[in-house]
Amino acid sequence: MTSTANPSQVLEFQCQCGAIQGAVHETAPPTGRRLVCHCNDCQAFAHYLGKEKLMLDDHAGTHVYQMDSSKFTINKGQDQLACVTVTGGPLLRWYCATCKTPIANTLSSTRFAFLSLILSGFDRGKTDALLGREVEHVAIPSGVGELGKVRTANMPGMLWNLLVRTIKARFNPELKKSPLFDDTTGKPLAVPVKLEPAERLAIDEKADIYREVLAEIK
Image 1 (cartoon, rainbow, N blue to C red):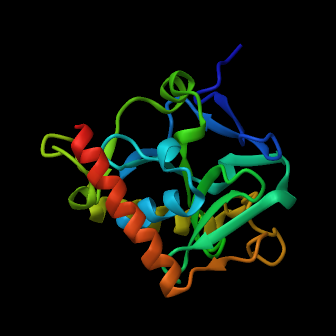
Image 2 (image 1 turned 180 degrees about the vertical axis):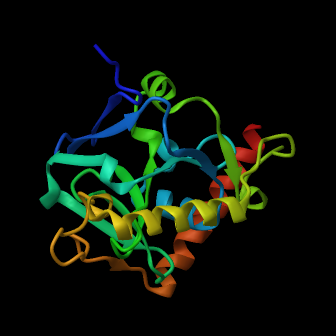
């Protein structure tokens, strides 16, 4: 009997209210990339949802896993999906419309077979076991506290990974599949909410105060 070279493993997902349930299907070793993003937009998303204590770590970072979108499935609650663009740009940030649990970040089209899964709602032990413990940090200047010794991600390398995923998806349409988009049209399953400038300004003010609080605690 021959063994599978890259056996599939499953990391289950459920939002806080249980309306949305799904799973990550990853190989061993994992093919994605664990990151902690400290950018202002990720912080704004956390405050938009009112989930900053859930989503942001002690350095105001959001833990994510960049992966092929086809490896994430939703078996319940696609009609409960919602998304927002905090900048008005092509990056969509997904969450449960009912309980505001964050789910993932994607670009606005399945042309890019890419999904940045937000890990705050997952069990830490199971996440480490399946996705590994190695973490890189991005957008450090927007973070809080001493981050000078953390491992930073190489931006050209990140862009290269995105390009490789995009090219592979062109030759394999299965890789373009995403539970957040319509398979036929490639359009997002929820109409993106676009923040007005005044809304974003108010959120940024909350984020400033929250960073000050974190800095005082540290």
